[in-house]
Amino acid sequence: MCKLCETNPVYEFTNKRKLCERCFINYFNKKFLLGIRKYHMISKGDKIYYFESKNFKTEVLKKILNFFKSKFEIEILKIKNKEEFLKILKKENKNKKKIKLVLNSSIDSESQWFLDKIVYGKTDRLNNLLPVFESQIKPLYLFLDEEILLYGKLNNFFSNNNYKERDTHTKRINQFLNELEKSHPEVKRAVINSLLKIENKK
Figure (cartoon, rainbow, N blue to C red):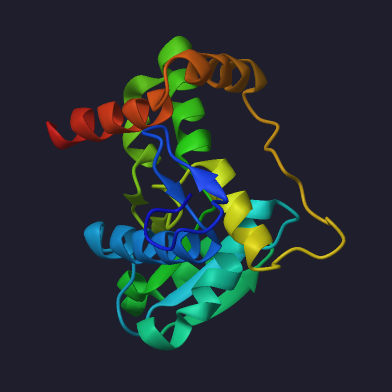
């Protein structure tokens, strides 16, 4: 049972703490805002650009940013690809600091990319895996894919299941991490924490 509401839980953390639907949504919203403030991702008056896709993380990201749009006092705009964003960035040269590209990265995707770079010796640019890198921001950086998916379902963000539940990149790394997570809970978070420590020491 959810300890706070004493109702049936919809999510259980690795420490056995359980949350009901209302408490999980509140937890997600608070953590989302915490991540944005902690890493200084968004400022008043920013123009936030995103790529449209059928990935469930993009759908959640788009909806939650629009939900907090008035709080942040930002403009949210859709673009086709990164090349289009770079053209906008170049055109808005005087206001570069107010132009942001939002990515749907999560603990799952970033831990996969981190291990992929380590395995294949591509460690020269680990800083592009950080929650903020140049004009790129990752508001879902502190969440697992399963948390993001559940949040979207509880808020009815998806219609006709017209979305992809899983990314397809780095499949071997993804399978390895998922298997490791079963016997060693929180290993994905540990990978991300290691990345942050490495970059903070530079």
